[in-house]
Amino acid sequence: MNGTFIHAAETKRDALDWGRLGWISNPAGTGAAQLAIVEGTLFPGKGHDFHKHPKQEEVLVVLAGTIEQWIGEEKRLLGPGDAAFMPPGTVHASFNIGKDEAKVLAIFGPCVGDGFETVDMASEAPWKDLRR
Image (tube, rainbow, N blue to C red; front, side, top):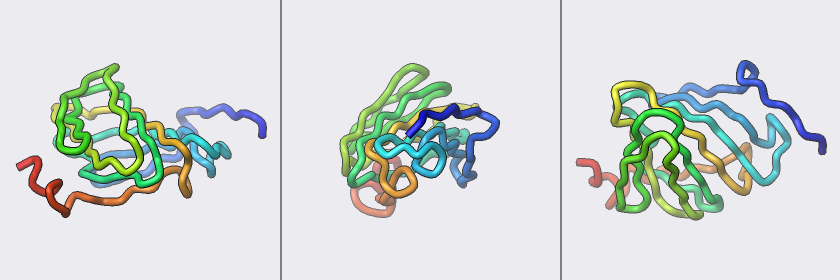
């Protein structure tokens, strides 16, 4: 397999109710088999609620803004340059607590399906009550 260049203007983007995802690398876009990389934008007051990736590690790097990051039941505020690591199966969540859009880079390994697999945990205990 040859390498490939990824131009920002050509990046596939998905609109979500809490933000946007830009697919930097995944099997469909680059042919990557081991890494999936997405650029995420979280809208002010919104976030990617509690979820897990059963078979994947994730590193999340904050590029801009302030994120309320949860790993399990532990919460930390992260700013530009800060990062979080989640082992496979670890429930986590990211919320933008700022007034402007927040930007993150999420790296998943290995690829699962089209890049990553997410299992929603937001409606289950104890996750549904942590942010009240």
